[in-house]
Amino acid sequence: MVEHRCRSCGYTSVNKLALEDPIQPDSREAVMKLSSVSAYRK
Image: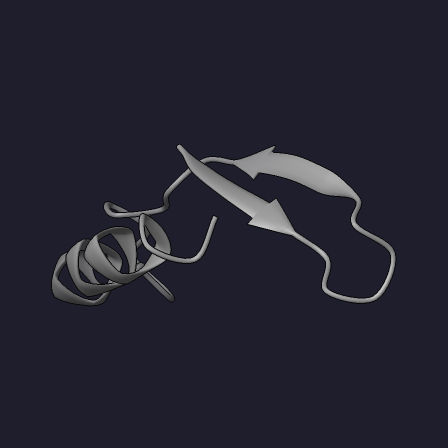
């Protein structure tokens, strides 16, 4: 699960990762990089 927060209005939503999607899967490596960066931006 990934939390998305809008920079304009502050709306927060939770999204599922699509790691196993055959057409356009999420990159596990990119998600790991984002999770380490986002911990410092709160």
